[in-house]
Image 1 (cartoon, rainbow, N blue to C red):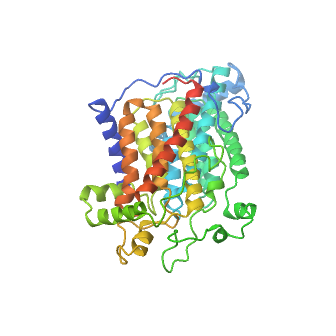
Image 2 (cartoon, helix red, strand yellow):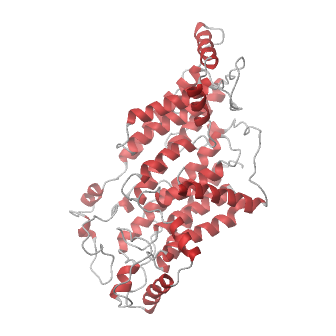
Image 3 (cartoon, rainbow, N blue to C red):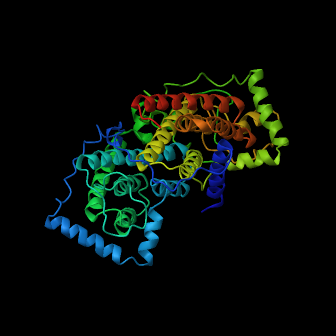
Length: 484
């Protein structure tokens, strides 16, 4: 675990302790059964029954006898490697290991927050829909789990066939291989197989349960890929659609607009992302704000001066906040920070697999749409970063920010948008922590001014935009009528 991940875990524990007035809640009881999870609304599937799953082996049949024999053989021969795999994949929440892969893969890429939030959403949606589909078939077939073997972990209280753990493994591994083609797809397939088989070795699933779960999850994953491939995800596609030869033709004329650092040949990050398909927004410009303050106005100068003055008097706490929320190169980026917080928080809760998958899908759908909306505004206005403003206004021609300035426009703040969206979703799911999530969102937003890479309007408008996006996702969640 990296130092940053450890810090995030401690933050999540602190969130729970502060809200509950004591130690994080824990329970030795298993999460409750979820007989209605198969009726929940899905994101990519038409409904949870869309993908057919053949029935399990008939009780007393030769196939059922062979299934039981395989289970008994695996549980009777648990070596150290098998036990380590059981422990590794019995994580809480069960979606966690797969999101951790996505977080790590993003950290090894060139910085692109909006591409990262799109990848996180695809993985989370795949796991959600796979869980819903698995739970539909669980209650359609109502197969009891193994009873005559020693179980090393707690079994799901729901019917056994198909395995929910295997379904999310199949779905997540399929989407990860697509979203991160630089990663070995065969290794991801092997992780999925290991995750599924660990449930058999643990004594809580029959081999046929995990076989059916893997097949179902992979089918869900393929449908998510169809959705992703139909999306406009390349700058060239959108530039052609807009009648522009390249991104530079979309850059407006004007004073004090964002520009690349002197001598830089880097292409601005994802200039067409505001045209990507969205989940709940009608389009990326649905909440496009008005322009940033006029560069000749007193407000604009005052905001630039505010950043400069703050940089000259940063406290240790402000430096800490700026660094914690930085999300720079080599990290899981701003939407990844919120995923880390959510995973650490969910790990302290006794949530069923479907509810954990639902929470992560709602969070990441909200942040994905917030990222698209933020990038729409960034390249609609090409708002300057503080370094451009402070230099060109003559406040300090030699000034440098505390953090590295990103290679894309400042207005609106992506941190603000991601944080506002995350705040709304997490506050809806866990209302007893709403005030703390609001404080963390505002802290994440203002951290960008401490870092010297955003002005106040960037942060405030971005945070407001993210909250609007998050409110739409919350409205979607409320319409599902799922209690708790």
